[in-house]
Amino acid sequence: SVFDPEILDITDDDLKAKFMAGVANVAAVSLAISYPTIASVPHSVVNGMKNLLAVAAVTEISFKEAETLKAFLADPSAFAAAAPAAAADAGGAAAPAAAAAKEESEEEEDDDMGFALFD
Image 1 (spheres, helix red, strand yellow):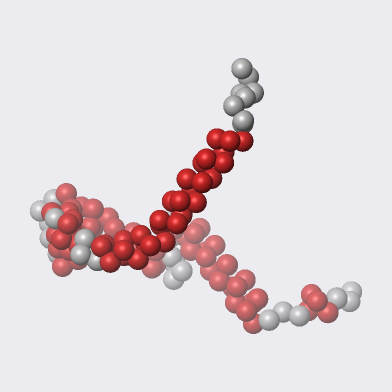
Image 2: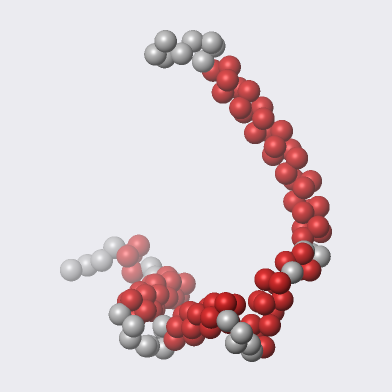
């Protein structure tokens, strides 16, 4: 049993990618069956934090991380200070995209040339 040279030409990146895919599978299975492993613990911690924030949002329970969430829920406009700058950057790119979309819709209207398929 002799292998082709292409098969045996494995790089470190190939091995790392296969290993990380295996770790992701272990984490997914562990989360699905609620069995804690080193691969699934970070996900479990994040999911637990989401649950704690959800409880804190609808009750009077408060802790440091929940204060930011409650402040946002109380006044979302206070957190919109960064939104105008982001909108201005995206707005410049959005205008040509909107014009292109309008041109495409006009072209689509012209494709049928006034005749419908089932008239």
